[in-house]
Length: 295
Image (cartoon, rainbow, N blue to C red; front, side):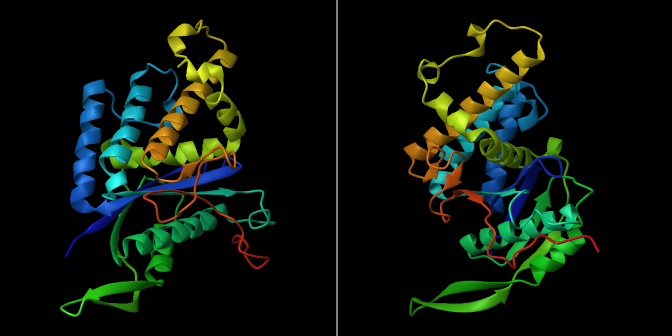
């Protein structure tokens, strides 16, 4: 039986209006192959890890490695459905989250629950291992209880009749083990996608304007900018570098018909959630849908 795993990281948790989780998932042999390719990129650039928060400067080794991470993940794996990358973003000022005494720690566990259930359904798999980035603020035991109490509507192909038989089966996350992102580039890849998702919600309209501008079409590079040590210049270089990263992802997804859009809503989202690159913006399901509060 094939073994499936998921690697995750977050962006903006507890200190941003928009917060995101990204999960890279697939069969263990496919994930191992992807990990080796990403590790080779880190070795060639002579850097320990890729982090979204450290991307400043188009020609910096981290920025170059980040773009290659995206290319490898999309072109080498996602377009052939060898992996999935699911990203969930929520707004802490919406009707679900704007509640008195909100418990952000418990809410993060609920958001993980929503995302991982969707991931498991897309793979039609009930047996999983989860390897999140090391975060002592998350109660993974409680999250595991939520996950392992959920049922999955699963289809099985019966031989020799070739008839699909559907049944409800309980999810089983046999292992949930936190890992250091420096030691696993799959967690770094999740960090990149979570960061791009959050950033697109915060600054998406300006990103779209930049992508459609003459500056973008002329392929502006930071070597053409006059470097200074001012804080505003650093922020500008950071912002444009992230725009270029998002633009690269958007063009790849458009080229391979993955239905990822940014222009329509002003942030990254996927029109068809079954696609292997799935940007999902959580929307409250009704007046009853409220974030957990502190007891």
